[in-house]
Amino acid sequence: MAEPMSLQIITPDAIVFEGKSTFFVGKAIDGQFGVLPNHAPMIIALDLAPLRIDQPDGTSRELAVFGGFCEIEHNKVSIVTPDCQDPSSIDVERARRAKERAEGRLSNPTPDIDVERAEAALQRALLRLHVTKQL
Image (cartoon, rainbow, N blue to C red; front, top):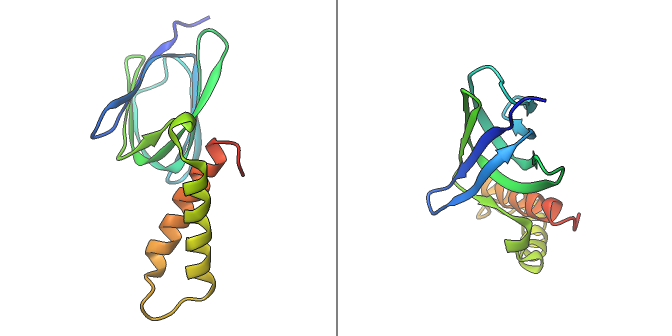
C-alpha cells in the first residue's frame, strides 16, 4: 500500500486539519473528485461541499468546506479555504434557523431581498446540516 499523503486544511483563522490521509473526496466547481496518495500535481478550485477524509487507521471524517483551492504536489495536499467546519463545532439549531430564514426569503422575494445572498445562505445552511447528519 502506498504511503499516506499529508493533508493540511488552512483557513484565515487556523489550521483546521493537519494529518495523514489514504484518500479524500471533495467537490470542485466542475464536479466531484477523489485523491489517492501519489496523485499527479494539480490545483483544484473547490466548491462549497462536504470533504471526506479517510485516515490511515481506517476511520473517516467529514468536514464542511466553503470553497477555496486544493493544491496537490509530492504527496502533500494543501487546502486553503475561507472557512472549514468540523461537525462538532456546528450549531445545528442556528443552521436550521438560517435554512428556514433563507427559504422564506426565496419563497416570497420582494424587491429589497438580495436573492443571490439568500441562495448562498441556504447553501451554507444545507452544508452544515448535511455534515452534522441532520439533513
